[in-house]
Length: 275
Length: 275
Image (cartoon, chains in turn blue, green):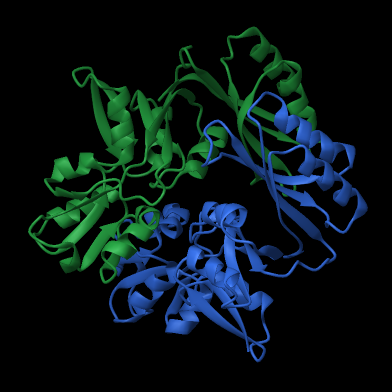
């Protein structure tokens, strides 16, 4: 059995993402980890083979922890990106009417994402926060009472709660991006992305000089995030996603130039996108 | 009395930021709001004069909600930026030794930021999540018991808890950025920043063309964040911070060109930085 970690507890979107990618459960054993830090370190130390963590817009928190650790604390490759639509379900007991529900339990961000819905349908219910959506479902399932949880379908099945309503999130186009991480390099698929992190000196036009390189080699950038470097005040770190794989000639040439023109450079991986 | 809103409850970092800026309490009345949405809408409708909300790296959540609402939902100006170092305190009752503490209460992100500390000093304590750090302090203060909260000094004073330890966050260089929002334009101070949001068509080099404009006019960019647009798939929205004020000639010229070369453009404000 190959050991695959995910951000736990069981029943979260991370488990859902992991199950969609590692779907042969005769071959893989999925293991929940309490935090992103613990999970990434376990892969880095070789205790497990791979891991699945959120990298963008997840209700479990995260993008900063994941990208910072990839950039500065561990040596892992992004091997694939999995995009999962964020769908929240209202879960509970069918015996109680909506207006009887006294408490709604979930992770603060899940409750925030369903704020208008909850406000309209159960204005009197008290909001109770939990450490994850799965924890909320487990807690509501532990005792038959007029309480509801906001959580995933996976958690509803796992803990045996009824679906009271579907797609209760206020924004319908919300999605979460997960990455598969491991020691090996990612495979080249039909649709590929390359992620890197670099620093430049803090003077006008430095970032522009770097983006010029991608423009010269016709490499399209799909994402850019800047953050002040933690080590040096006034220095910035850029996280960039590019269309294409590092095995392609143009990408290879562009990255060689970028590496020469930056004060810090780390390739986070070239990998396939699974949607 | 001029009414100033902040992201509540009382005792949060937002109140601390608001107090540092609106320090004449004979002139201002500070009012807590339950969510960023409620607060920004109240300013937009003219019910209160100004508001203070986190915009980056806050433990109360937030950058996405704040910038998305500023970009697409309300017409407000950023009038000032306030940078507050994130300092977490362990608060409780002096009668209990560290190894007697059975529960530590706080917002999930505050607990995450003190994870190593809590793990080392009270490995057996259960972590209990609350909606804000202030709520954790209020709850622990409500009953003398071997529980502790992770919170601000402001909250400790407000609810009468003792400081058991200071600066317990794992990363010492953490800071949170808050913005003062209102209907009027920001004043020009010694150190100024200009924030804007724009969209470009999704073709290679479009962002590069825009950054070229800032390079031409010698305008330095201090921050850039890209996010997929919520309205059109494949279209990106960029949030950019620039050094300088819109009343400066070079900045004015640069922004005029940017406005002409983008499919969506909105100035979020030119304002002073308070550190």
